[in-house]
Picture 1 (cartoon, rainbow, N blue to C red):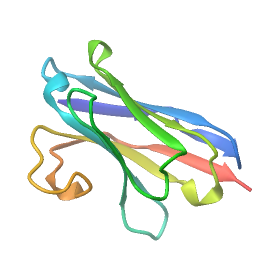
Picture 2: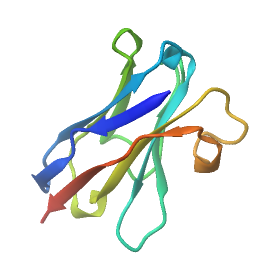
Picture 3: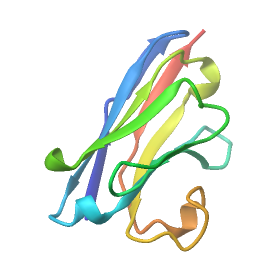
Picture 4: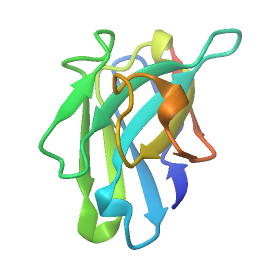
Length: 124
């Protein structure tokens, strides 16, 4: 599975962006997908995850109520709709895929495939 994240950019506080994670490979629909982010000088952190079927979604407390993760398996794409953005959301955003969870969904070390990242910058 190869992943490509895109959709980042510069937005003002309170604005919105939609990130996309496009995948190649016929088995993408069998994979759970997570979004992670890493700000300069900080460790990578979990943002959101979605199960292979799309039935289950999970969010970090810091984005709950503002971000929505979804997927369209027919298009091999996972989305991250980000609303009410603030400067603390500024980071490189990465999507990742794992076939089976061996740990809590937020544990990045279990994800098998990673996209190259897309930069989100929120100005104050």
